[in-house]
Length: 82
Image (cartoon, rainbow, N blue to C red):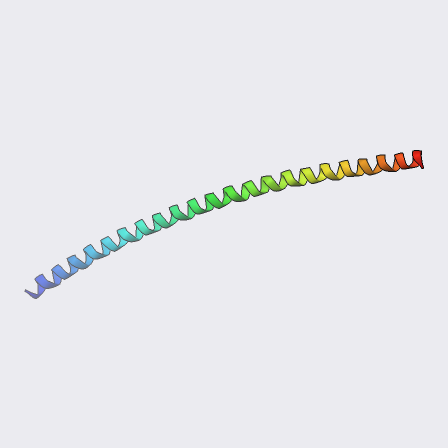
């Protein structure tokens, strides 16, 4: 009788451990998927920000070049009129 109770307990414990391991694997898989999706979303946003910053930098360089050209032209006109 005691051996039957012990065997049943051992079987029940084994089943519980298997269920717990299955749930643990499912949890780890879900956490990994969530992490991957969050990081992919963040990486997309960071990539977009980087592209925008490059466009802004290029526009600033063009504006600086045009401003310097206008300054030189204005100084030349002032010299001519002057």
